[in-house]
Length: 489
Ligand code: NAD
Image 1 (cartoon, helix red, strand yellow):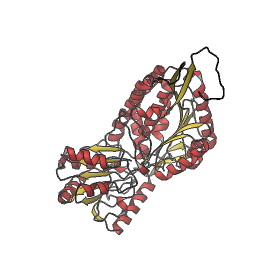
Image 2 (spheres, protein in one colour):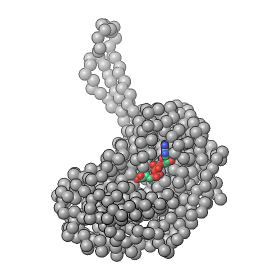
Image 3 (cartoon, protein in one colour):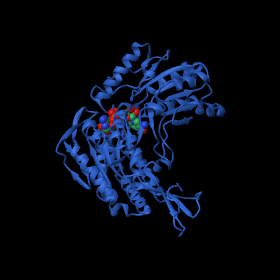
Image 4 (cartoon, helix red, strand yellow):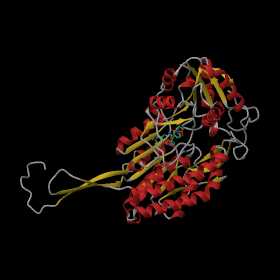
């Protein structure tokens, strides 16, 4: 079995304890992962704190930090095929997606590398005589970054790239499920020339690793991606260090289809929005809201298109649909489908493990039709390949159904009517709206949700500000002695 190491303070170390990682396509253990302990976390955070203040890092100009990120981006591009194979092996995500996604992740490091020396302070025309004032932007300190098991390289890039560009140091905890690509990625920081301690990458479980990291007194900033229940733990942990915290959480994202939509394009976008990545995406368009007049034709077209999806081994370029990442995920989906059918959902297709793939955590592309609004599949996150359809009467009804959720991450609107697209996008409570498209990303655009989908935004230039804080500097320019000391100036 292959053995991975964690990366602490510039050193690759074999951990005292390990755990087995399961290949989701064969259900067999294939690698040993480091089970980082509280002591490992403490060393990594202390190293990050030292590195933050050490002139090897803090003495670099912002332009030099940017160049390190450019070098990292080049190395990442070169390593993309190897990292993609590891991600596919460890999580079951299909190789078609991991290869293209990892190559694109390099753009996040380039984007924030380019921003590093464009983050200016501000001279303030202060309302006091004989005084000059300005605001500086300083890096906030040690960042604790925590990611879930899906797209670990991508979800870490949106934290690492702005944090490092701003001058912070980072301790990153990979998920206990599928950490191989992140642990292998650690060596690129080494090769790119980042000083020791600036980035450490560990993996381990929530309680003994993630909890210790997010409550550590030297941590100034927490950047978390995961589920809402864990997010509540994170917020409680942050009571110890009062670290500034951002949360990227789950979703139950609606796709609204109006009668004038281009149905060929819409069907492919719905398939891309849910069945790509086997539905294991936080922005999965898992609630399809369809105008009642086009419900039968859209359901039929979706059924025909979904039936052609090629299920297969995730490491084959022909495969479009692989296994789920974990058995836990499979059990959760089976349970939620069963509860939804009991509550009155109609099974249009799928709803079981495919007979062609009895080994591996495979689950068929599944479509459920709901005639009432209170069925669990319309409200709970599957994080899997299950599409729940609900018809609507008119625009008002569509908006009400779209907003009938505590989540608010993404939404899709399909219509040729521009005025309607604008109206509906304003009325929907979600951090991202895609109009006549779905599941697009770019480092240039912010990403994040409303309500239970999270707090704060990642991506876009503004995200870098969240890794800084301002320092207000006041300079008295008069040589006259200060007069009355008992009044505020
Ligand atoms: P999870 O919340 O179970 O775990 C996420 C991470 O938190 C893991 O690394 C885990 O070890 C760690 N963790 C667990 N308990 C902890 C604790 N007490 N203290 C600190 N860390 C702890 O999530 P998951 O099952 O791995 O991932 C699926 C969830 O992630 C879904 O809800 C999905 O929607 C969400 N997600 C959101 C986004 C986004 O950008 N909004 C992206 C991907 C996934």
